[in-house]
Image 1 (cartoon, chains in turn brown, yellow, purple, orange):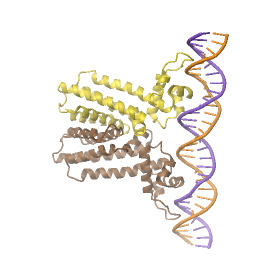
Image 2 (cartoon, helix red, strand yellow; image 1 turned 135 degrees about the vertical axis):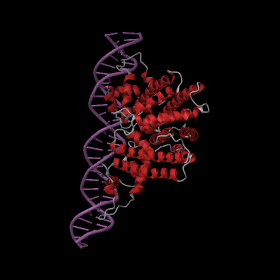
Image 3 (cartoon, helix red, strand yellow; image 1 turned 90 degrees about the vertical axis):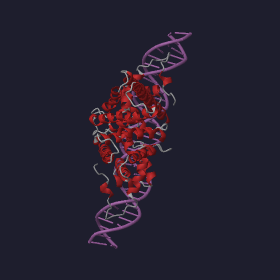
Image 4 (spheres, each protein chain N blue to C red; image 1 turned 45 degrees about the horizontal axis):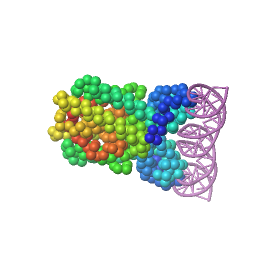
Length: 207
Length: 207
DNA sequence: TTGATTCTTGAACGCTCAGTCATAAATTGG
DNA sequence: CCAATTTATGACTGAGCGTTCAAGAATCAA
């Protein structure tokens, strides 16, 4: 179960070639898991979303869990890259971090699609019992906290933030708020104008 | 579905008397939903946990969703009362709020039972699609935010907290952090000593 | 061309699920 | 005691689930 699908996903040199792009299929599957959750999603849902038949999905990803894990991996890679770019695109500033956090208040509250974050949703649905999901969520959260902490550290060097902040604590603090925003964003009574002030209070703790 | 079970739960004057206490049954059911999540939990799981047979559960609570809603209501009532008492037991102080928040870092990270919060778990599993759960989560979160905001307001009057804080924003901020703590608490790499510093950063934003 | 290999197709399997119902048991009102 | 009413019991149902698999199709190596 370590990498139950990656072996299968490598292009085979012999035999009939695969007729679909696994990355495209997984992106479609990820949307379904994201919308509905893991347990509610049926294989038929995934077939409909991907346009593939059961056998093709099973031969490529092993089983339903394999499809979820592939979805999480692909989703996390994309979103971590986006966060990293958002935090490093401009020179460290209060507004740079503010914009990075406001991204989560915006995506959390998009009307008609309050499905939050695939990783957060899956974590709450499947932890603490599922070791495969746990391993991935731990890694993703660690990377997010590192990126956030690094941004604050850079801001400290340029005098934007307080200098007596513990790196690890700040990263966890910001990650905690982001996850909280993703929870609140699921409730329709919380709009962006309710969540944005939270970000400003967060920044007040750092400067 | 408004109150699908409450009508049934009132004691009937005629006929064979109910042999079990619905509140006890619901507490046992709530533990199962809390541990496993709604969709993974089967009626047989609930029968095992409550010691009752299917017919008794169905006649008392209508259906599986009715059992969940009753569990949420009972759980929320207990926990809101606990939070209210925690916040008002001593005169308003930085340490009073700190203790109230540290409660969540402790319960979130109990070894061997990182099942978080029933309301948070159910919200992420069933929102935004389920209106019955949505209605309850909205109400519970609104009450939590109100209690937290009121505690800060009382602290402002005694000079413990900054005076330029918006009541609504502070309540949402603290609620957001609590929900974030409940998410992080699901990951075994986060212990209480990782979460406690978050609380101190939160307090730094208020004073 | 032949055989091995891989993917596609879609029917089929075994199982679990939420929910139902007929019957029996316990209570109340008259 | 006799209906009427409510609960307890547990077998049952129909639907949906994840997964498997045999047969057909497409490719490559030789």
